[in-house]
Length: 225
Image (tube, rainbow, N blue to C red; front, side, top):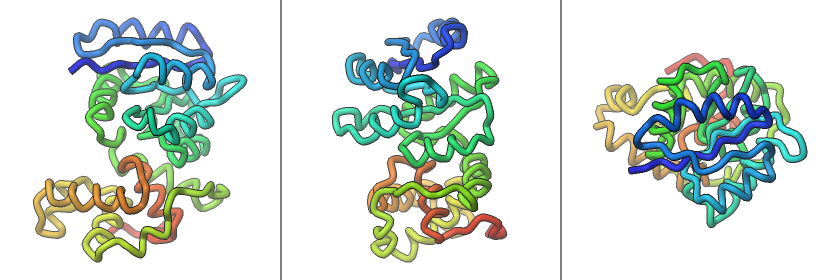
């Protein structure tokens, strides 16, 4: 399968660097480049991108607004967004995750890690390890004013098992680790997580973690399970 990638950054040199090694991969095709968020939304639709590498801080229309617009567009439902940031502890990364990004990477990421991340996200999974996303989310949700997330009342519709899986996901456990703890297969864990995402209106695992913290189901500073 060819993964169609859109590069979004206001610095041409950074885009050129990413393009140079991504274009050499047989399963990746660079379908466009944008220097601001508004152009990113237009090209995501025009070029039918699978994955958008999205800078956060850009002029005119930043990466958070662009992420939100792409995530809210029904005709772009299959587009996955990887946020690129100079500072991985930037609170704007959390806002991007709330807006619908699948995860984040530092701009100093190793080429092999970026390639792996693109392929993982294109397959429909969350970008980073749950623990990495959890660390950022728990750090900032304690003092960043929350933005609304879709259907938080959906917590009431979760089964006991789905809620249990959600808590463990938010604490950073992988499907394998959750399966060992709950005596379930990793595939069954994934099924419960997917059902929780559907009921909560979460696009992927990264946003599921944000919802768990923002709803109060899991609190920053809670000890791990």
